[in-house]
Amino acid sequence: MGPTASGKTALAVELVKHFPMDIISVDSALIYKGMDIGTAKPDAGTLAAAPHRLISFLDPAETYSAADFRRDALQDMQQITEQGRIPLLVGGTMMYFKVLHQGIAELPAADPQIRQQLLDQAQQQGWAAMHKELVAVDPQAAARIHPNDPQRLQRALEVYRATGRTLTQWQQGQKGKNGDQSWGGAQEQFPYRVVNIAVCPLQRSVLHQRIEVRFREMLAQGFHEEVRALYNRGDLHPELPSMRAVGYRQMWDCLDGKLSYAEMEERGIIATRQLAKRQITWLRGWNDLHWLDSLDPELFENVLKILLLNDILCKPTFSR
Image 1 (tube, rainbow, N blue to C red):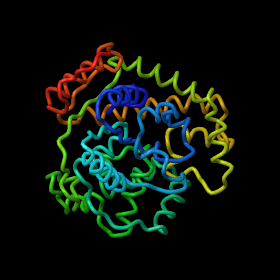
Image 2 (image 1 turned 120 degrees about the horizontal axis):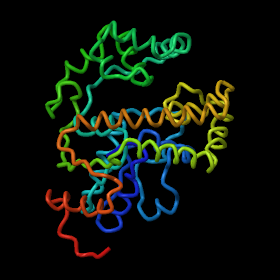
Image 3 (image 1 turned 30 degrees about the vertical axis):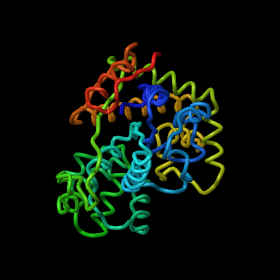
């Protein structure tokens, strides 16, 4: 695990080269087809050397929930372990990691009419006003959900309007087998022992610099043209989860004439830094987490020590 631009993929690929591991992507943006540059999706050469599961399988017009991820990831993990290999989960979507391990409360099905009403209201009033509405009806959920997280805000308000019960009441009414009151659902118990490793540069300023450099590289690689192709499809809109992804939202506003190119670039970098901050906040509350400096020259060796101590690997016999 780790924030965006921290070096997770490079480390994962190095591990796959030397050990019987298969990568499962834990990233809510990499799932979409045609969204390659702005998501920093591994290139064809990297994927040939280290195939990733759960990337590039969904059209950007479709939606994909954390519960969907849990189902698919558990299926892939079972296939990998049955082949005598080790699932290596790699990504920065902390909600996916959380739900995978602890389950999620079974909530009412989505109501398209209420959802559209909420989207229309948000367009008129802004998501900050929607967050204030959630504070009034479900302060516990509002404390967990950031005002800049439209998808979760929308879902929390949708559940309340559709059922008259808050999201918190639904979640607390279904304690899962893993014993987590807020997240547990009716799913089966998580059947794996996990070693949690987070990689991140020790200095926040270094991470910010890496984010800026990578965003500018994405622009040089054709990010503008990538989003233009999505924009010109005609069936996508900025309220879809895919188009709310960091970078894509700012580029869409640029294509819509709401931002200049320079403003898009600046806001895209700022939004990515804010995402990294939220990811680090999630990780600070994580139990049994091994924090490592992603710029440490001995990062690979340090990871191996952790895996060996936890009996994940036999003693390595290779030379690097």
